[in-house]
Length: 142
Image: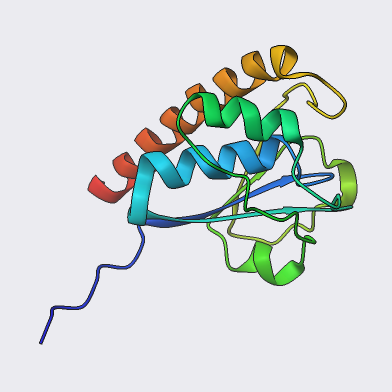
């Protein structure tokens, strides 16, 4: 028999309006950098039909493939199931539940932008993801 797999240290939900750019890039980075240590979700209040091609290309440039991802509708269940809820311009559409860690990341919207404009957004998201992982890891030690 194999020992049981450890449960994730935390669960994180990334939310933006269309779930096609910022939240998909953030989910891609967190999955790539934290592995199984963190459960990752993303959703949007008005999901698009597909992930932004410029976001897919920008992530591909750093070795992360988000091309198979699909925008998903934000649900109260996804918020309830998450320890951290990180919003990226979803306005008042995000449901609020007590006991959750809410963060609002002010980031430019890559919608309608070319890959050149998406790269700095991608790089800023990576910095914030690295800080988030450090915070989650520190909470596990405490």
